[in-house]
Length: 288
Image (cartoon, rainbow, N blue to C red):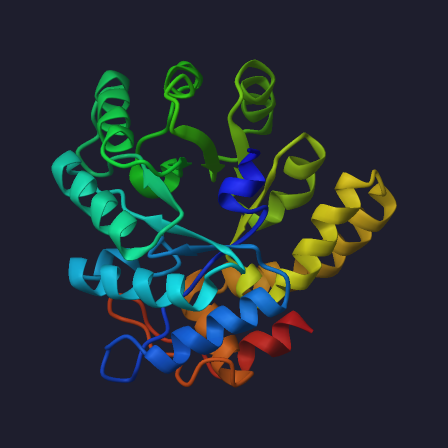
């Protein structure tokens, strides 16, 4: 079974639709899942950074995974974000995600406590041992303050359930080296770099802009797979304004929700503090 079979290839870092009072919008979740799958997503990352995971309680995370898994059954893989800076908590969340119907796990490096690489290896192995689900590591040092060393990635790749990595580090040379020396599937986690990562051999994308651009992302993946680099470059260039509008003016979750609400895909652009809502009407105008 390939990584695309386990995780999908065109993954979206899904926002968590919320009501104005901050509660999770069941209507919004259902509508968004249908929108993403209909427009080309074959994997949904739930309760990740873009899903405002730091503000979700354990109960809300389980509720969200269940709702997405129920709506996406047979149509897209559901990858649940379960990583924290506490190994025991991460194990519990992993087991709850498995019980809630997740197909795979997204495991971010422990943040804030900044353990040694040996500690990171022990943490990731412990979580991977805790369920039967495949694991995608998440390397995002600008958020966690802790990068995965290449030797650490190579070591973790020997675990039978650690099968992929979402690379938001942006070191393409390192990524190409690890891809050449391990069986890990690489997923680009920086929308500005989707084209070069795919061209270098990445399996797919975990895209923030995919909340609105799942179709061109799918077309980009297909163009690379068929060796049509001219088309791939044209698609990438066409998406530069969208990426800039969604990820540079403010936080991607807030901007994506503002655009999705403007399009009527989710009822409200609500986010939880410390995020603040994107400006209605401004995001789509910048993306044109």
